[in-house]
Length: 475
Image 1 (cartoon, rainbow, N blue to C red):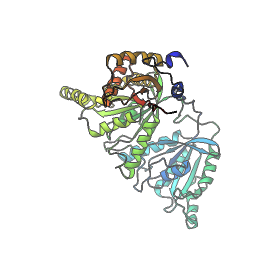
Image 2 (image 1 turned 90 degrees about the horizontal axis):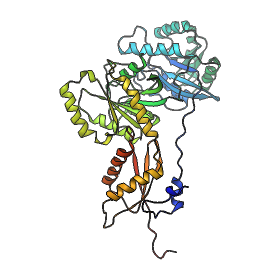
Image 3 (image 1 turned 180 degrees about the horizontal axis):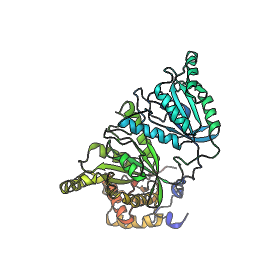
Image 4 (image 1 turned 120 degrees about the vertical axis):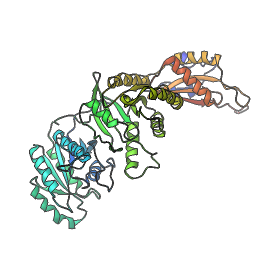
């Protein structure tokens, strides 16, 4: 421990035992590069229980499940583990031949998953049997030159086994009777999946190591999926005029400005998680989890419309999670001069809490200023990872407190004895004091801290630890 790390602002700090826990704070470990994992694409027509079976194969509830057909609409990747081998499960939207509109986009996602996977699991409702849709899917799968397994789902008891044998007619081999709801036969199915996987995966899908993790968040229909598609150069997420098309988070590796990033497109947030219900409730949980799993979030706001309560709530979620932040005003091609002047007033009035966040005006439709996202993301992440040395922090704080002492509270003026940056991600400053510091004074310290040290794009947390006064006469 160095002398400068022990001596307080007034030269009186000497309690090394109390300080020891903050003497050295390790930064979170960087993720190690992930090894390539084989990919299993789960396909089938709507409402055959694909997502329920996916949750059973994962051993945890990840995919959004509801009785309403067509809940899953995008390709969604999940990490799975069975008998010591890791692989990726890709849940897809329902596959319908000759589909139109939104369903056509969903079908395209399912077909793309087939072509990029190492093996395909076709899920069929054993209670219904092979329909014309399954026959059409089987033709596509036989041409794909990928190992294919057939899961006869909803075989909840012995009575359902009689219907399974009819699925041999699909020409895809032996059907495996399973129950996604109860878990019947899932172990045998997983064993079969591992047997058909190639020793070397065809491609890395959704690698979790290396690239910085970026969450795309915002209210419904603000253009998150359109922006992701513009960044990737492909129809990675389903886009439709219907608000709320995305339900699950969708991972994509995106190359921006010579660097690979891992983007997650999330469901639009309409309500608070506590008040949401059904699919919206689970989608809200997935979005909240995506924010917490990310390092930086891009909050997309429709620049052509007034700021809404939903926009402010999404921003609060990111700040409360302690993630780096970039605000992107989308649909800038629709913003005229009057709207720009109005927007500046809204920003000054409504976004006081996040004045430190950089703003980028983009258009997902035209690609305007999309290239500016990478530099702002790097700036935010650099701030998120920055640590101010203890000696420098206390030297700055000593001068500031001398010129602007804390306000008197309860007839006493609290003293700030010592300060340290206890951690990064987000940067957290701990102040050791002799009394409570008013919220207004803490905000003043944060503002002055940013003026001196920067931290653009990152939240800064200031924690106060009041040093207890020892009672006189205590032995």
